Image (cartoon, rainbow, N blue to C red; front, top):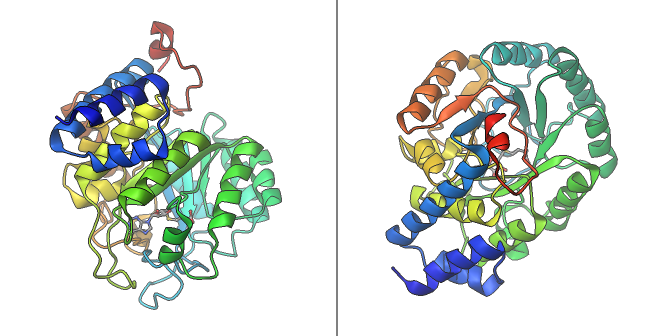
Length: 361
Ligand code: SAH
């Protein structure tokens, strides 16, 4: 094993911080053995804080109508082959009802940037969910709004917000997005969300077109300093009806290595093993958990819309019932020694692990 890379991982474990140059070296120093070393550390750290628990979030894909035109995304505005849909508030509540009975205690409302979902409408839906399921957390993943809008959503009871930064390098950002979209606004949103008090999640795609060791180092440094409560990373996968239709997908190996690094950097972080990871490899989600992730976000959307929320080709579980997915995950997690728990799965603030912390999972 390369000694410099080992030392960097040890340093990250002890100080939770590296310089940009060091992150560059860490990313560039990837090897199978180093990744195993990183995963072992990451799993040990995660175990002390979250035990063997894996948190689940019920993902409700509320709309695939989107005003944006991100070059990588299958539901981008200019994809004329995308069959558009929008769930009604009633359909969303039905998904929550089913999810609750399946043991979900977090609902994630995700969607394209659909003007129908104004802050006012989102607030009404959030209030309805929180009224009925007061023991559940609501996470929003609906893209960019003004600070006032985010504040209103937080006041309405939303607990968390996921907004991947996509890349921490402005030039790279501009290669993934049309001119109308702005890196600075994306970052503004993230800082606003944090300031308002949301448990905030950033994140990026691994192996997105034009990504380099340099841009990845910037992603890691950004994640270090922004210190999010959640971080979503998964491999980029091409979609046939986008400008990136012929670009290579990201790999399981690099995704898992980066998951381990992020766990070592922020021991308490909530880190999903993503559906995209399960799409590039049949046991991708298990590998993600074994690399240090502790969250799964199975689909709770009505079955008849699932194939329409195609961010990338060959997305898994689009033909399954929610109950099937839930059972399948239970079995998959048991098979690797983990347990899916019925819990809101909030971020644990305290750094030190004690028996007490583990026992209240
Ligand atoms: N409109 C919301 C939700 C976007 S979809 C928002 O702007 O945040 C959620 C995430 O899916 C995106 O942030 C992106 O990182 C990821 N994604 C989109 N297209 C993808 C692709 N082709 N491969 C892998 N992940 C993709």
